[in-house]
Amino acid sequence: MNKTWWKEAVIYQIYPRSFMDSNGDGIGDLNGITSKLDYLKYLGIDVIWLSPVYKSPNDDNGYDISDYQAIMDDFGTMEDFDKLLAEAHKRNIRIVMDLVVNHTSDEHKWFMESRKSKDNEYRDYYIWREGQNEQTPPNNWGSCFSGSAWKYDEETKMYYLHLFSTKQPDLNWDNPKVREEIFAMMKWWCDKGIDGFRMDVISMISKTKEMPDGKVNGLYGDYAPYSVNGPNVHKYLQEMNKKVLSKYDIMTVGETPGVTTELAKQYAGEGSHELNMVFQFELVDYGGKYGKWTDEKMPLTVMKQIISRWQTELYGTAWNSLFWDNHDQPRAVSRFGDDRPEYRNASAKMLATCLHMLQGTPYIYQGEELGMTNYPFQSPDEFRDIESINGYKEWCLDGKVSHDVFWPCITWKSRDNARTPMQWDNTEYAGFTAGKPWIAVNPNYREINAKAETADTNSVFHYYKKLIALRKEHPIMVYGKYKLLFEDSEELFVYTRTLENEKLLVVCSFSDKEIPFTIPDGFVRKPCLISNMKNAYDHQDIVLRPYEAFVLHRYQQ
Ligand code: GLC
Ligand code: CA
Image 1 (tube, protein in one colour):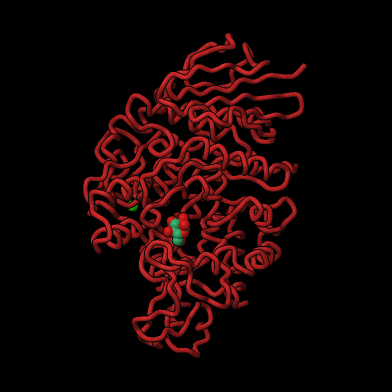
Image 2 (cartoon, rainbow, N blue to C red):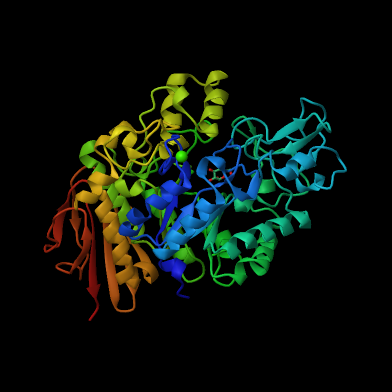
C-alpha cells in the first residue's frame, strides 16, 4: 500500500457560518477562523476542510454558488482568504476547499444567461426539458429538499432540473464547455496554493440522457438510477484528474451518495486516477420513515457489518474516509453515543476511539472534539436549514403526518443540530459572537465549551488531542489490517489491527450497562495506548463500565 500524507492526516471540518464571528454581525467569517488557528494547531489536526466560502445568495448556506472566484460578503474578502491560507500554512495546516459543481446558484451568471433564451450560448450549461404544461414537469423526480426536481421557467416555458433547491440548478456536465470552465476555476484555486478539494455530491454529476419516471418512494419518484453514479461520472473524474488534480500535490475526497465498496474502488482506487477517497453514507442514511426523516437507531451489529465490509473490501485497493458526523448530520454523541450528562464525556471518547483506530482518514466536525450535542428544538420556527424547513412543511403542514409523530424524527435528523454556533466559552452566545448569532446557541454551552475543555485534561478535547498525537507515533493506526471480533455482540465493538509483528486490540462499549468481557489471549497486561477510564487490564476477565473504551498494544514474539 502506498504511503501518502493524506492517509496519515487528520482532517477538521469547518462550517464557517457557525465557527467564529470576528465582527459582531452574528455570522462566522474568515477572520474568525484565522483567529482560531492556534486552537486547531493545539488540537493537532493537519488539514482543514472549509465548507463553501464563495459568493452565494445563501439559499443553502453557500452550497449555492453565484461566483466561484469570489468570497461571500458575509465571510469577508479575498484578502481575508489569502491571509487565512498563509496563516494556516505557517502552522503547517493545509486547507481543502469545498467544490460544489453539481449545480450553481440560479444567480450565477451562467444560469442568468442560460434562462434568457433557448439559443443563448449558455443554454446548454444546464439541463432543460419540455414538460407537458406548466403544472406537469418532464418526469416525477423529487428534489432532495422537497417538491419536484423540476422548475418551470416562464421566460422560455421550459423546465430546468434541480436535484436540490429551486435555487440550485444542475449543471450539464455532458457539455465540454462546462467541464473546461470548472477545470479552469479549479486550477485557479490550486495555483493560489490551496491543498485540495472536498467534492460536493460528485457522484451525481452525470445524468442519463433519457429521464424516465422513477420508482415512487415517499411522495416523488426516485432520480437515483438516472443521476447517481451516472454513465459518464468516471470518465469526467478521470478527465478532471488528468487536466487538474494530477498536476498538484493535493488531496481529494468525493462526497458520493449511493457509493458501494465496488464503486469506491473506482472512485478512489489506488490506480484509478480519479479521487483519493470518498465519503460513504451507509452509516448515516440508515432508516427513513418519512423520506429521510426518522428516529430509528441503527443496531450495533448493523453498524459493525457496514464498517467491517468497508474496512476489509477497501484494504490495499482503495482508501476509506472515516466520519461520524458533518454539517449535514446530527451530532455524533447524540446519535451514536449517549448525550445524557452522566454519559456524554465517556461515550464521546468511546466514539472517537472507535473511529480513529480504524483504517482510513478521520474527519472531525467542528465541536465534535468537545462532545457538542444535538440542539433541544422546541418549535419549527427555530429551523434555519432549507431542508428542515421544507421537510416540515411537506410532511407536517401539508397534513401527511401529525406534528407529534413527525417532531421526534425531524429533530433527530435536522442538519441544524450541527449548525448551532461553536461553543468557545461560557460567556453570552458561547463566545461565538459579540452580536446576535444567526442561529440559536445550544444552551449547554455553559458546561460544554472549548475554554473549559482545554483547561481540563480529562475532557473530550484532550482525548481527541491524544488520539491525534498517537496517530503520528503509531503507523499501525494508519496502515494496520483490520479484523472484527465478537461480531454478534449488540453491546461491544471489538477489533484488532495488525502491522507486521505489531497488533492493537480496540475495545469499545456502546452500552450504558456494565458488560463482562474476556480480554483475548495475548493482550492481558499489555501496554494501554489510550483509555477513557482508569482501569487496569491485568486480568483476563474484566467488567466494562458504561461506554468504556481502550486500546491495548503488543508485539508478537
Ligand atoms: C451536499 C452538502 C449539503 C448540500 C448539498 C447540496 O450534500 O454537503 O450541505 O446541501 O450537497 O449542495
Ligand atoms: Ca461576521
